[in-house]
Each structure stands twice: as C-alpha cells, then as structure tokens.
Image (cartoon, rainbow, N blue to C red; front, side, top):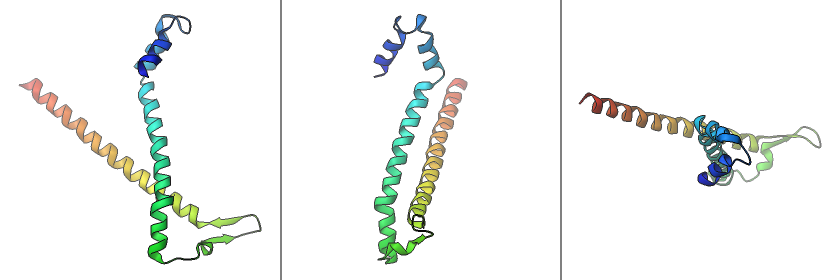
Length: 123
C-alpha cells in the first residue's frame, strides 16, 4: 500500500519533481495517518467493550432489573439518560488509562534504547 501510494505521489502527472511525496514522508504524515486510524479503531472497540461487556456486567452485579429508572424524563421528548452518560464516562476512563500506559511503556523503551546506544558509543 505504501509503495503504491509513493508511486502515485511521485508520478509526473500529479505532482512535479515529487515535492509532495517528500513533504508527505519527511513531515511524518504517514505516521500521523496511521496513528489516527489506530485511534479511531481502538475508540470504537472500547465503546463496544464498555456497552456490550462492562456495563451489562455491572448491571448484573448490582442486580438492576429495570434500567428505565436510570432515565429521568424531562418532557415528552427529552430525558436525562444516565445509562449513556455512564457508558461514555467508563469509555473515557479506559481510553485515558490505556493511552497513559501505552505512552509510558513506549517512552521507557525509547529511553532504554537511547541509554544502550550511548553506552555502545562510549565503548
């Protein structure tokens, strides 16, 4: 896919001298696009995980049989929906925690690699 994209970007019919492909690669747009894609997919996964597994488990453990009591009607067309709010809150907490631990883990790997390279240069 990457090779096809680079060939397309380097073709003279679209861009002269491959300036755009250089801009695309040197400024990290490919990495950014991959990060956004992974973020969107993991966000959808976490939403599904919370709404289909976590929340029903919590409801079962609390012994709630009537979830309508968590929805407070304001008017005939509007209501406070605490179920969706709670699901969104749990999703947010999971995203924040996974992002924190993901960054923490990979930053430790990068720091360790930098230390190893520095030690190798000193020897």
